Length: 145
Image (cartoon, rainbow, N blue to C red; front, top):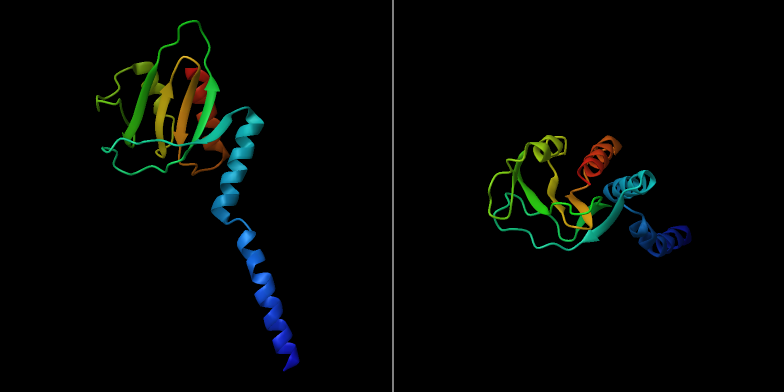
């Protein structure tokens, strides 16, 4: 009987340690973020106010992968993926720029937004996928920078 009481006390004491261990989803995200850092992509969690017209509500804060822009006067734009392969601007006008669309079609369906300002190009992603998806994202950001 004493053995059972000691075992019970040990389980009660050690059970919170199991909560500290990251889940498989968290471990996968950490691995993707480390791979992004290894290939030179910068990443941060950025709070966002998403448009009400998106079909699914993206998380906030959302993972933002970004690269610095090149050039003297780079164009500034912002496009949301309203549906798989359907890219629209803030007024829900469909993207008609062929060069942008050729890069956007290589992105996974859980990329919510791609935006470019004078300093950087940023991509907001749901972080679901393997390292190959990260390579596609890196190639797209390099090409658009």
